[in-house]
Image 1 (cartoon, rainbow, N blue to C red):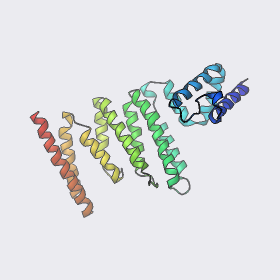
Image 2: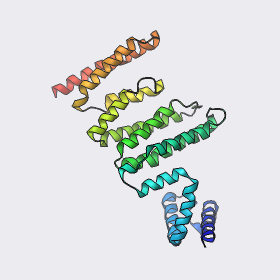
Image 3: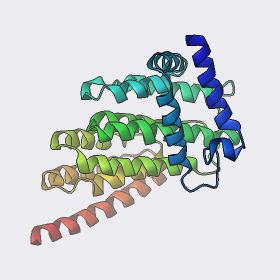
Length: 270
């Protein structure tokens, strides 16, 4: 009974995903339907409800055995406790994705870059968002950070600008995390940001970290910390071996210093 029913369910799913017969499946595969996603969800729900529990259980078990990403996602849907998240499982998924796209050439070409970025975006959209919805802020933060650091260090043809798009998505999630994080969580986030302007993130993505340090920690308790941090970056810029790089960074941090002083004086007057 198991094999027969599972094969039947798989056949139905395949038929529904490929047929063009609107009379049979309605708007299930109608790409022009405004309610395509909701209709598809409803049709799938009806299909699942029409199957007996044993068929669903065995079929789902087989599916999860073949797809580790879905397995981890399903596990965390069933187990909502904060301690149940194992970020290392997600990191392994990301590493596997990277390995798949790098292949023998150890380079992601133009034709593969969009798919690579899309897979990382899918993890953020589904898994990171799920962690955030469940209040697991630090796990979500760790996973975002891993993707962010990886993003700037992957040998890839980024002619389409996928890196910048994904970096912006991560930045928006960072802002949301800072908004909902508890004070002790936010302090850990601040420590991560201020410790990752050390070359571990590629230079053109460092601006995102600098901006979030300056704009995302406006509480009074961070004023002295931020001032000391800016001063340390000015000193570090003066010690750069490259004169051009040092002058550029010195000018940038000097401007941030003056801007921060002006803002601080305005806050004191208030």
